[in-house]
Amino acid sequence: QVQLQESGPRLLKPSETLSLTCTVSGGSVITYYWSWVRQPAGQGLEWIGRIYSSGVTNYNPSFKSRITMSIDTSENQFSLKLTSVTAADTAVYYCARLSTGIQPWGQGTLVTVSS
Amino acid sequence: QSALTQPASVSGSPGQSITISCTGTSSDVGSYSLVSWCQQHPGRAPKLIIYEGTKRPSGISTRFSGSKSGNTASLTISGLQADDEADYYCYSYAGSGTWVFGGGTKLTVL
Image 1 (cartoon, one colour):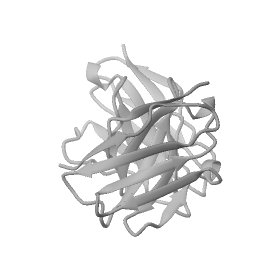
Image 2 (image 1 turned 90 degrees about the vertical axis):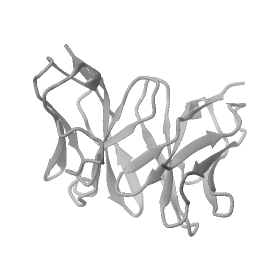
Image 3 (image 1 turned 135 degrees about the vertical axis):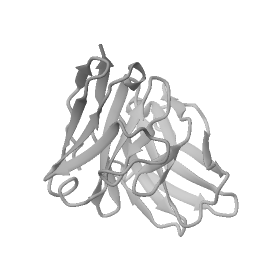
């Protein structure tokens, strides 16, 4: 079955850029939408954005000025970049496949922003 | 884009049924048949339990059911079991390629 795994730096300083990659195994990234969702500790889920295999993106307006998503179909990966991070961006970041529901999900990776 | 509204907590005894509401607007829940629900146990990734408002993915118990009326979607869990104790989130398509989550509901099985 399709599995997803997030990777990237886990500790950032304020103003740096968060960069995460999601590697998809057991299936192709082609002809699906792929999403990022985050969850601050003890809080709810927040949809960040989605990317289609063609590269078309849609973002949560809350992030629009700071976010870039990209996809590499040859590597079966997609990525998230979030610029100018602050402590408020500290969260578990999940990558997931988005259809008419979100499934499957990666295990999540905790990214901490601290000076 | 505002978060969908869910009760912060609900509780029920084993064997009982509970319902969790998810209230949005005519721009999201009310406009699309694309409401989903996920279950999240502590320290785990969320798991899809209902999609397109009423459909269950393969392997999800028939004790979980979804419905929608106007701008409010609902998740009903019947025959409560101890393992149902978890956080539950609704989310909906909100137009223009965007999605929005509810704030989450903590279910306690008494």
